[in-house]
Length: 274
Image 1 (spheres, rainbow, N blue to C red):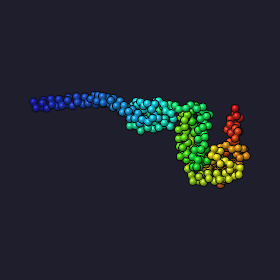
Image 2 (image 1 turned 90 degrees about the horizontal axis):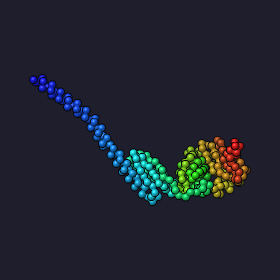
Image 3 (image 1 turned 30 degrees about the vertical axis):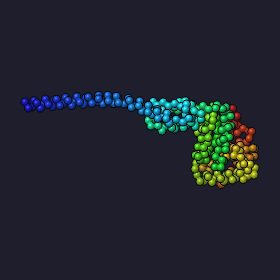
Image 4 (image 1 turned 135 degrees about the vertical axis):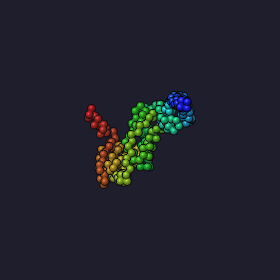
């Protein structure tokens, strides 16, 4: 009798335990699926609300934010490309936003490319005057309002200043950064100064030091010198090249100086290949 009761209790305990174990996965999945769907929607809603509050400035009055699965999409328009970048940075800091899709359009004036290039180019020419901007050789290209900055900058500060200037200029729809920052080196810094002295101390080249818009720009990378800008004559171009080559420690000189009203070497080569 006792043995029978023990078997009955063991069977009952085993059956109860098995039933409990079988019910656990079903309960857990149901609980997870029931509780997991709401937080995503709730998080997206709170993230969207916080994101929109980050754009409570007048420059963002026409910008809207939608958040789906942590991805924030920005739509609407702003007057300056700078504002588009700023909106992107603000939304990246919002809790619950894992990525940003920036579809904001830059409105503002629509300038012809040549006009935009001329006006922006003038601003860039005088940027960082007094901070050794003769050692910046930043190039400018414009197509359909999209600005591409290339060439060389002496420091990251010089590069960032040029990018900021372009981003805040009316009519610019987008800015592409292709500027190379020259390597930081005490030896190169000394070479820059010595090349500048050699070039600008030459009588026929002194005039190019008077106006930042007409300066001969000097870029140095590990002892290799590059000359940029526009000069009045072929003799001035040749003189600058010779003077730069006389500086001790200069490994090579690439002369990209253009003669006013004459095609550049690259243009000449392009014409030959046609």
